[in-house]
Length: 177
Image (tube, rainbow, N blue to C red):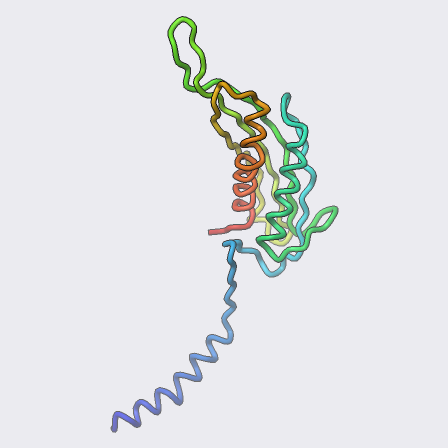
């Protein structure tokens, strides 16, 4: 058999079969890495409840709004009031500072303090409950002991701690590696 005839047979038979097979495939692309079922159309984020004995009065609102913003910017889901196809409920369980890196002898002082925030999240996916979770997330930032707690909050709370917490919550809910 001639080589040209064999090539023609391959092109005539296998290329259309290959193209047909590709048409049946569903490829999902995402810039954020989010992997969300096509059945899921809506999301809801309930206002965070603050159960921490101490804390920043703006923290619950910061977490709620940052999480909503992340969902809107990183997914095609529509945010709804009430309960969506996926629902997130959060509770602030811990907020505080503690001394770290103690230095000195009899008059020991902390060189650093640590600001820590802990939240508990419940995630419910009404379309596929294998993605449901109930988990705690904690983030902290160390700061100079000469700073006030107010200065540490101004510097790190929203810009770092809340951002990292929101990333952790979002990734656990929507990035299914």
